[in-house]
Length: 306
Image (cartoon, rainbow, N blue to C red; front, side, top):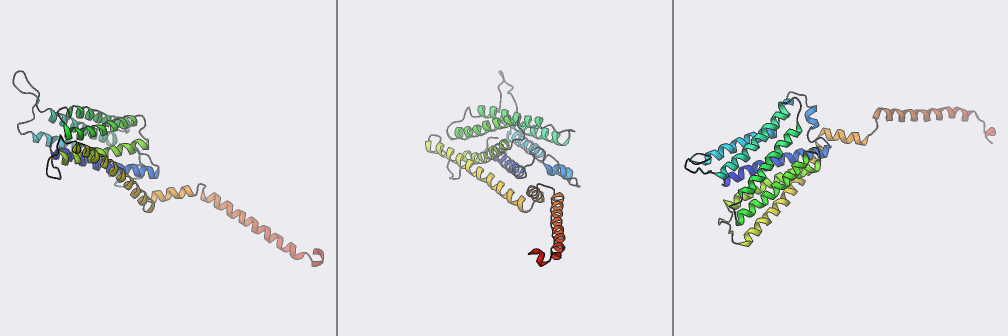
């Protein structure tokens, strides 16, 4: 699957997954809600309650992983075999088998998430995060061996991708002990966006250059511009996450009733009934004192006052 479609398809999936997770994280930060157990899932009891509780990300991983597996197998015209029949036998299609391993782990991650959220009686967050961490660990190992025969521009492109996967592995490992920490989820979402957008960029760099001419491995300026493009991806994805947070904040402040109720409760920390009743009783007591003092003053004559 070392072609244009083989790079751009996983890239698009990771970008959309990162955007979806950015919306979820932004909402949780704005409403100070739980990332793993959102309040809107527990409060929704209508006829669409089960639809909202479906593991959408898990099913998406299963579908995308299965499609990529089918595409990878179909790309080998002679048939995807493991070893030759000659003596001594030799392994065949090493990169294709590595791609299949990546896509199989993606599908397995989706199955684990779906089973944990929709099949088990009690959701097992550690199992979900463990499956994701396992997939990223294996992805890092495969990518390191994947670039043994690469050089020049291709090596630089994959080295930067390995850097992102390594950082993502560290963040996901830390989430095993702190699954509800907002900062780790923000960094995880940011790295998913970078990995996806960079895979899309890699597809154009390696297979369909915009200039129409292939990149030169011997030209140091081409290698330097690869790093420059990667830095642009970092900045663009950071701005994208800030934009999603800004739009989400505006939406929830203007159109979300849950946030208005939350802001109203913050502005009135005491129960309205007790504070209002106390204030009314105080006003009535003051008015009663004034009414009692008025007839006494009228009975006093001017001489007595003098």
